[in-house]
Image (cartoon, rainbow, N blue to C red):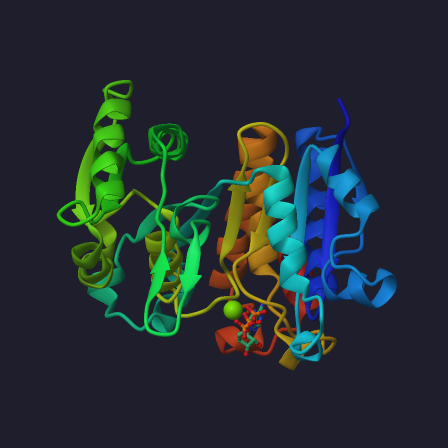
Length: 345
Ligand code: ATP
Ligand code: MG
């Protein structure tokens, strides 16, 4: 059956890297008999310019009837003082689609080891996934700011915790079979509940090992022992911080994809970096984060594990062949990198 993929190219380098991701998808699709259509929609700053709103109604409607969504990047300095900001479109989209689970794989490519800020022996074998709860917790609790006091409420229900923990276990089952659940159980009530739920869910996954870690200790271990982890799962606030910490390990933003999942309905796939306005339109952006987001989409939304593996292998081989964009210390343009990856498929 034909799958409908809605693309939101957005701003800055967004359109360039989206085109690269779609070129790779077009090249891999016939090899795996993957049948799809693309519906490109305005989103972010581009949609503010065109329609006065970062998430126009027809864009929202298209995403809601999509089988998967690819987002490149939104935002830019020209919107910093705007009444409506591109980022509001993303928050509204996440909310409308119920995207509560954010997934960020962290791996260090053989050919890019020297870019990592960590020593070679420490990053050996690093390959983990950060699973962050995205729609609950302190960011969405009541906020009260008085002159001399302030209050932020952290709320989690059993169900909210359970569904994100299950996602982590499901992912671990297909990987290294270990879940590290992160909390601050020695202090926070929400974390005490978090731990109870994690232990309860673990009973359904006897083949997966569960370990608990306190967030402060985990923040250190992510730097001292990053190869110890397989799947790290945590609440919204801790996940925001830990996923940014994890993104520093490879030493470049340009190779990191992400996925956001809902309970029902389409998932959204996007690079973790922003719109890189400083290099927009120059044809030198690194398209790998977008291309690997396409691979994640094939695997996680469509079960096309072979197609995903083809893309990931082609990226590895292209990097090993020394085809590197400027951010990776090379001279290759965006289109040279994209063509090399397609050739290696
Ligand atoms: P945002 O607010 O949109 O998240 P940001 O200020 O956090 O933006 P990014 O847009 O992610 O930052 O860019 C940070 C730096 O990394 C910039 O110098 C940018 O050029 C570079 N960068 C980000 N993505 C890429 C990419 N795909 N290829 C090359 N360089 C990139
Ligand atoms: Mg940023």
